[in-house]
Amino acid sequence: MGDLLKGISSFRGAVFPTHSALYRKLAREGQQPHALMISCADSRVMPETITQSGPGDLFVCRNAGNIVPPFSTLNGGVSSAIEYAILALGVSDIVVCGHSDCGAMKGLCLPQMLEPMPNVAAWLRHSHAAYSIVCQAYPDDLSDAERVRAVAMENVVVQIDHLKTHPSVAAKLATSEITLHGWFFDIETGEVQVYDGVLARFTEVQEGEPLPVAFTGRGHPHVMPRIAAALAGE
Ligand SMILES: [Zn+2]
Image (tube, rainbow, N blue to C red; front, side, top):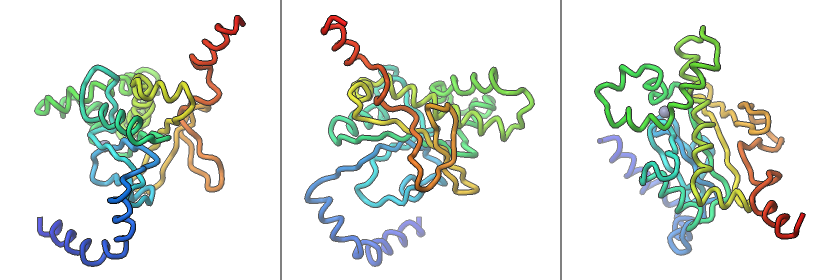
C-alpha cells in the first residue's frame, strides 16, 4: 500500500497541477467521453495507457475476461455501464478489448483451475461459445498458449455479439449512431490488433489507414429501412 500512497502524493503534487484546468472544466461541465471501453481487469491491460487517453476521454468498464453478458441474463454492472454510456453519455463507439495471456481464458481452457472459484466459473459461462469455437473449428494440434490466444480472440467477437442483444445498443445500431469495435492487446509487444468485421479476422492497425470496425449500423439492412419500404408499399 505504501507505493499507492506515494503515487497519490506524486499525483497531487506533480501531475494534477499540470492538468488542473482540464479537471476543473470536467468538474464544471461533466464528462462527455467518446467511447465505452470494456476490457479485462488484468493489471497489465490499461485502457487509458494503450490509447493514450486523458481524463474524460474514455468510459471504462473492466471485468475478468472483458465479458458482456447477453441482455437479461444478468442485471449487473456491465449492462448498467452499457446503458448509461449510450443513453446518458451518448457515446458513439464501444470497444471490447481482449488481451494475450488472459487468466480468464486460461480458466476456460483448464476448467480444473476454476474448481475453487465458483463465481469465476459461473461468470465465464458467457465465454463458453469462444471455447467451443476453438475446440471444434481450430486445428487439434494447437499448443496450450496458441489455444488460450485463439480463445481470447474469439471471445472478443462473442462479446461483440452479446453487445447487440442489449436494447440500447440494438437501437443505436439500427439508426447508425454507434459502432462496435473488437481489439486485442498483446502484452509482450504492445501491439493492438483490430477485428475487421467484413474480413472476419483481426488485422494490424496501419497508421493513416481507416480503422477497421467489428460492426456498424451503416450499410447493413436494418429494421428502419425495411419498415419504411413496407410502408411505402415496395
Ligand atoms: Zn484477462
